[in-house]
Image (cartoon, rainbow, N blue to C red; front, side, top):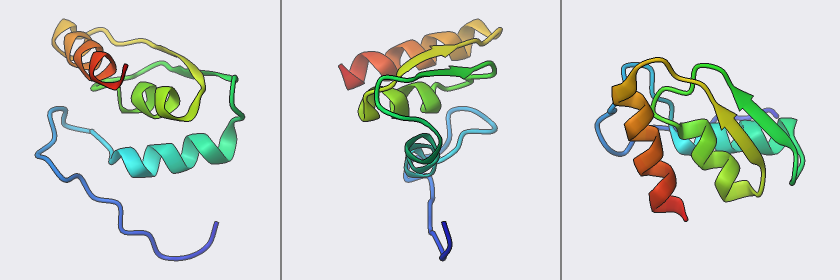
Length: 80
């Protein structure tokens, strides 16, 4: 993809390395197909998992910090 994209976090980040959902959705759309499995081994706040849910992909996230595991669970619950 070529062009200029202005992906920004609208809310203050809840994780130090949180990425904008619009950016991650664009990447998931480009590099996977509906129904594919997507692994995020460092899922942090769960942005990739939310993007996959929005785009009809199955996802698996791995995170070692219980605080961010709970954050990702809350974000996924809000999508359903």
